[in-house]
Length: 509
Image (tube, rainbow, N blue to C red; front, side, top):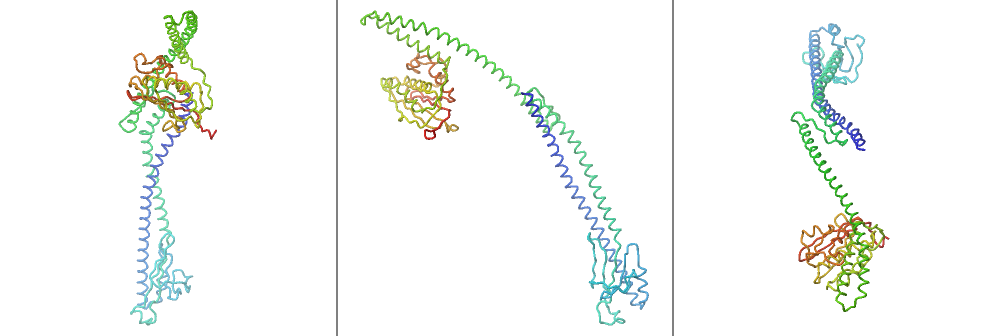
């Protein structure tokens, strides 16, 4: 069974170690991806913006240079050379150059097919057109009708024409794509160069010791407390291993002590069982001769006149035989407890019957017994005869502690304590001489009595045998309950019988 539990524990703990490693490495990987990814993203965006800004500046410079050339040709009266200049302005980075009238008509273009083409929505102010990725594609710049131009063109219009320069951006797109690919490659390389050593160091510094802890824990789960957790270095894992070794050392000592106590308890139980059997056998052997002796003395007593002094001696012998017989019966009851026959019974009625048996003795000792009227609201599952004996013995003990009179108070209440809301508590208290603490600790021990010292557990039921309360304790414990006792010398004693049986009310049935 122990091996089976050990295997089950290891099968559950094995994935836990892997999950721990996976969570740790996943967290590190996420942090690396976040840090490296953010840094490379910022680098990529910065470089892309620089490339786009450089292209925009280059486009502006090209456009201004072309505009200055066009204006110079127009001022020099070389209108015929204007078309030739635009046609010859093609460069590897230039896609097209156009001179457009303010109403959108293309009057000259590097692409001859566009001449006389009408451009709709022509901007009449300086403007750069960009693509979806923010890459500059074209630029429009107006040629204003300045004073030198008004000699030929008059003063009617503010804008004479719009110069449009369009770039061929395939080179810039390729450079941006290369930048993106290079950034991704740099990110992957940096991630691997950092993450691989972390995995290696984790395997050497953490995973190995954790695996050793797991193997040792597996052996411990199998029931072996002789394992040793290997501790290397002075880190936290080494400290944990040291603490575990100390803890298991204490476990081994505790287990050895428990095994020794168990052996002692078993030996003691065997001795007690043997003593119980011996006591029962001796009591049984004594009981029959006592009956014969009692019968014989009664026969002799019948032949002696009442006035004969021997008659009184015979009666004393018979009284002592009865006392001895009662002690033998108590010994048999303790050595061989009777079988319990629990039934549903009102606890108050059981206590009332025990009180009735002691009414005459209490009256003779001038002891007042205070007890509420019997009410069977509280029903318990108990053997009424055995529980009656318990209450009888406790009350009889209280009477023995009040030889000169007093008050014996009995109460019944639901609830045996903080965790016993469903229990019932029967409290029996007296105003007798009380008991010292040393006697109070031993009153439930078999054969313990203080009657010989003249103060203590008196009464016919106990008769100084020291078995009455011990038998009562056994009976209550067989019912799943307990007895608690308290006493103060000169102030009285109190006994609590707390039943742990199933409790209901008369109304609930």
